[in-house]
Length: 68
Image 1: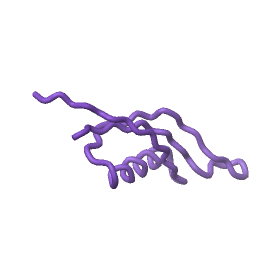
Image 2: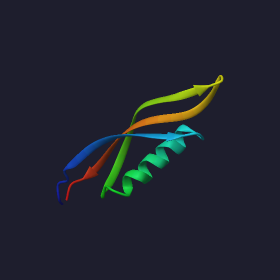
Image 3: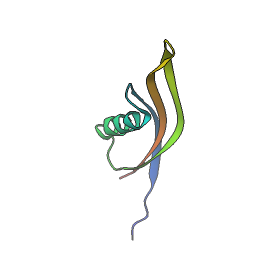
Image 4: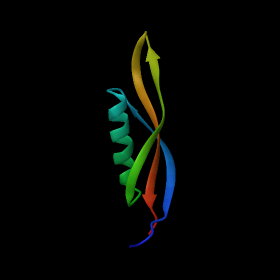
């Protein structure tokens, strides 16, 4: 069995639909430039309000990936 070494990056996903959509978009975008994504952790959730309504959801993620 091989031992794995991981690196962690922090990114923020944004969506006008939902916090779940913000997570999906962030992970998908990270996957276009980082290989071996293995896990994520939601660190912070926040949003932007316009005229008393939620305009954007923002989710800060820690994403772990295996080093080659």
